[in-house]
Image 1: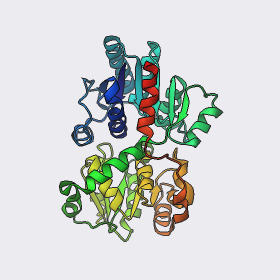
Image 2: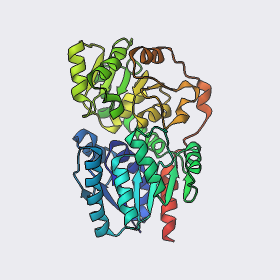
Image 3: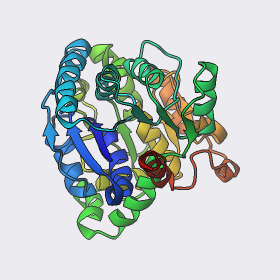
Image 4: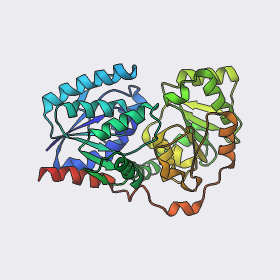
Length: 360
């Protein structure tokens, strides 16, 4: 059996690391890297750290408008599929790479497998929401991380090929956090940044909806960060860097530590050691939940509604006072940890078994 796997953005590298390992003994997997994330710290380093096989194809599409980026990916992925003739195309999540891969395969009548199917924020202004909905509707296998995801698909009339596997990100966190904590080169991140576990808060900002408001929007968020009692460490996404640096420079913020993007293992350590996470990232709010770190999500909705139970994750408006209030006064309920909505850490093996069974 031959499977072509499409990756292109940071979360997809992480998900692919565990699923590719489960597939490796029994199939020929061709990895295609679209180049959607083009910063070395957000792509090459992941292949090195996570022992993911090097891509056979690197499409080098890079950044651009949604239409330009998705269109270029669609054309180049189609060329790969016409060359490789795979049995299955495998995609992850909700990026432009996901949609382009699924659409290219569907047009060529190659069945699509979608990992992390069924997520819904019900905000169609989000490009990610459009990508995930469209991908689900042209997929043959839909691997849902939670019961909620399966329920969402059922509401849209999708029942064939749907299964609840649990969340591959949980598999990844359980495996790689243990490796990170045992690696002195990685744990040195605390000393390098001059911080101690539980003595800082971790933040990320990268979604277009967060930064579309320009400098005033970023300043409103940073004013809340500035008033928190612990320093806020912020690995800075390339999209956000110019605005973030301008905000810090103009406003003279002293409590915000802008740092370069870090590798996945360092990010796991920074997340697990944080007193709190403040983010607009779908993946990071969930990883915080896995590691029992309270989270403030800088969005009006989340596709990971399970994380909201017991106030381990709480949504905030992009306004200074609301962010500050949620960050300082939200108390998570330890009793909510007894729920296991994301599975048992074996999602990657279940996905591999389902796909490999097609070869019988």
